[in-house]
Length: 236
Image (cartoon, rainbow, N blue to C red; front, side):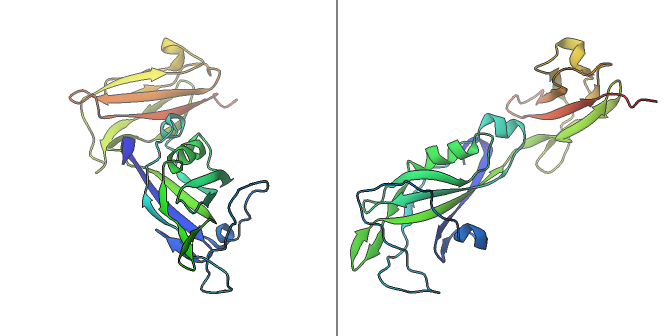
């Protein structure tokens, strides 16, 4: 998979499922309005309601993995989106639309990938036909290393211990640490020790979030980051 990303797709054509199961609400989603096409659309056969005429479900024969958006990666954001599309008699997807959004740029990444897909088209009476389908795409991060914790809330002047750990949760002892923020510079973002002990600034930056980053000293490809929300000291 690309960029340390795991993705799972599920083609939803009536009751014909590929990959993994999906919820009833997803199977009942209506296609977006205003989707013109020159081909006649044929319904995919449903074993629970086999009313003719209907077609066999299209089958993916070439798939391209979606990239993970940097925004979603930085936020350690995972989840699923659902796309609606027409798979033409030529096996090419078209009129791709989002019917259940995921956000943080992942919907767009899913569409970019699916535009490259190729299907074995749906068949009716031995001939390829155009059908409409829903496609569920699940995004999962497969990170070799990460920061623990992945996010934290720290009161001004307080401390939070971070650790760079491997997939097996084994700590990586030697790491280079840094702190940055869009609303602060240098000590106004706080400080962090060579052992990963973060100390929040005495005043809340604007915006009140900073990012702690660690890179393994022996391997710069092993790195991770965590978002820290700075909270004001409670009034006494």
